[in-house]
Length: 54
Image 1 (cartoon, rainbow, N blue to C red):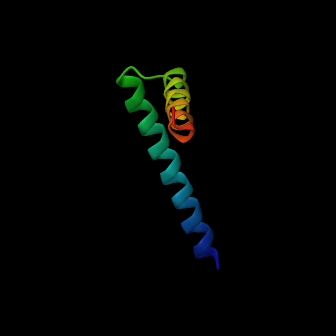
Image 2 (cartoon, rainbow, N blue to C red):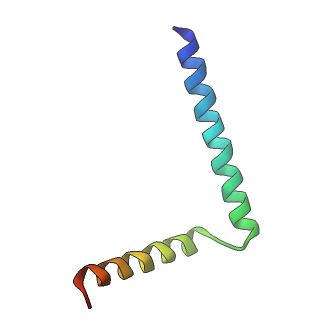
Image 3 (cartoon, rainbow, N blue to C red):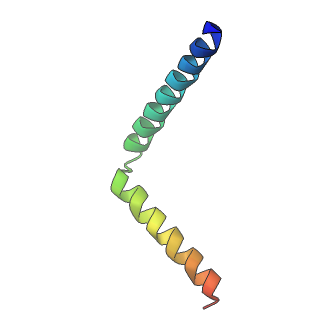
């Protein structure tokens, strides 16, 4: 039973490490959280435009 918790902890830790690693890479590339927000807004605006058929 304890093995499940060890596995979950390992997966959570790996996910955290990967997330930090990706964030670090993004920072090296010159991206920031604001850029990600702008990109998300732009893609959402494009999607709604397509849905409306304009």
